[in-house]
Image 1 (cartoon, rainbow over the protein chains, first blue to last red):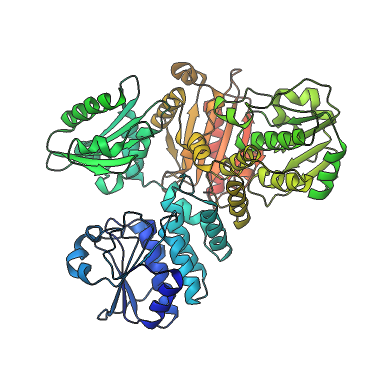
Image 2: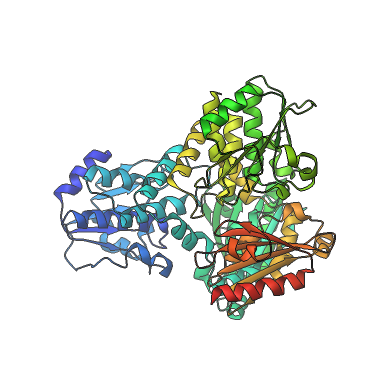
Length: 315
Length: 315
């Protein structure tokens, strides 16, 4: 059942022993939501904890490293920024059937929770959590502001994407005034490359290839490159956008070799090509301008297949 | 003489045949200021034109390509986002001695103009121009909003730098509401690399060097690299931030060789080092975390000098 911000706040006020779930492969928005809401509910004297199906990358430590969590049997379960149950990853089986409340900004939300607070005009789910925390009457301190700012900044590519509205910027302004350390947060999220990633990126850029009159750009990442740089697959999320940045490129492909010799491709496009359609040819899927698929063949073979299909789509 | 926004607007209202100067090696902020102010004054029925000492890179075309300019003898000269006279480049000799008004956000402004509207708390000079245009009583249309948004977005690294305040975000929100196409502008400014620039960037990254236990990162750009890639100095503004992105780097240096064999260095730092202080050693200046200076020596010699001074500052 869909509810509004005030109904959501009223419901949370009545509950205790609250478990907050983020999605697996956690990003700044789901974690920002989870820990901001957790902090707000703790300030109200409730027992709360956050769970994620995957390990949380170290760089997000500042969101939660001062929170003392105690164990308790959850009586109320909230999922934040989780569009579908399978996105809970390993937590899906354990909690999937009894999620009381979901707070989300994905238009594709499958309404799996008993109650749903959805605003698909929000560029980040943290924009909605900001409203909920205000409706709870909790004073937003610098830590809460930092969590919420992190979600808004990361889900908008640091205020870069066209999804970013005037309201998004106003929310950010408010959070900065409340103490969010925007300079530091953005530096951690966007300006800091680990040495191993920086080495991998250099190697990836050096090996960039262009096809179809430079309308297709391909980066391949092999296991050998991980070995040479000390990097690993967890560090590759920033590679895919690089393929789409050169003028004239309409399809950007990043093909990563897995340890078993199979591989995974990330597809990035602009308006002229539907990335999900390209991925669908190989059993994958995704969004209009960002999609992915897997191959049971070598990186070189996958490249050939993808470039061939890409060429057809460009005609 | 320092003046405030209202005094500035009153002065502009009284003038006609206005020449607006941007700094050489133009960026989004100086151009955004120039063309936003130009558009506002044109709407007031005045004769106005903008001049820059260097060619304006093609990507900024949308700022001005619909403006019809006529030639006229200037009676009032305004410099926007120009901290010192030498930053006017080739226009310095022609106009330097008779600049009536300067609108700027650099604390290092040398007060070379008859009147100075300065706000060094503004992250971008376009934040100040927004206030001036409002004080002029001009209705801000989508084109003016786009110019001002461009300056704010580019001078803050797309709202990334710590110089970005709540007010900066509120100005951006207002401009988006007024029609600035933020998604498109940010894609042009931050997501699109010309083929020649992409080639130059690859070469720059391949040649990246680290000093002082990887706390100093240096990129050098030579005339030979421009020749090999078909790129040129106008395309190099996105290089400097790359020097600061690897974990552990505190000083990022980009040294560009000029055609006459001299060179120019861009300095990027984090809180631990004052970039302007480093630049000052070599007659340059700038902000806390971004500064520049010139050298009458080779790139290699300049690198040695900068790394040496940088090493001292890191102690």
